[in-house]
Image (cartoon, rainbow, N blue to C red; front, side, top):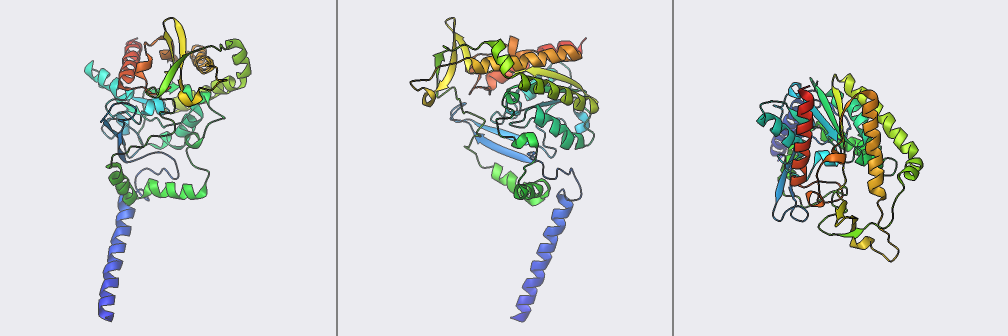
Length: 361
């Protein structure tokens, strides 16, 4: 019995030792990028069943690589020409890797004979606060990352700065136990393999930021309460000034990376003109006896877009006023702000046309 116990103990020790060595060698404890406790999804391959809000029976593939990036650039960050930052409307978690507007933008350049590598560095929920932190804590640490341009699809999350959850803006959780968990997630090869296996199971879950004002369950109501833009501008003047200051800081971070910043304004999908009348999308549980449909969200978004455009003019930066000119309609969105593949195609078309023209100047 003692001999058997000894043999089992020795073999168990050898197995544990081999696992420890494998963890050290193949994980990121010594080699590879060190993301410490950052909330950056890495080494992910996930499958989402989007039947309920995009298309019946549809399953999409969502991947992020070892650097936390989404896209095809040959696995060498030195190949990246255009880095795209943004929130969930850029990350497009519930669109297939090939359907996002960032992926389609690269395809359009490649089809036109330009091998521009366009790569997605967006994270759900990030505002310009988060983008600044991303350059400080994440993007600046990716080896050989020297894009020529950084495109920022900005505005929607900045409207909510100060009132929304700041998990991704901070880039790391303030909770010590969550930090410890994230540290292990960012370094362990075995956890990464577990995450890949878990991702192979079709997920029917969505995130809070997606589908909360879904087109499929909402009703359209005529706007009956009108917002005075100047009064609203005065009421949120501090937020607008703060946003402008963050644009300046973000621009400096982008230039420090050796890239040129390009900013793009964002539209909303929960307003439409129908028979000459402005309507807004609401959910049935919002409709009460005292509910009054308002255009406040639309006006507020337009004020933030104005700040973006004015900042570009003052700093002589190239901006694309997508929100003010693109022909998107409600059928191109699956909720208030996130686009269906049809909407993402239109966004890619619009940016390609204007960015290509700028590159030829």
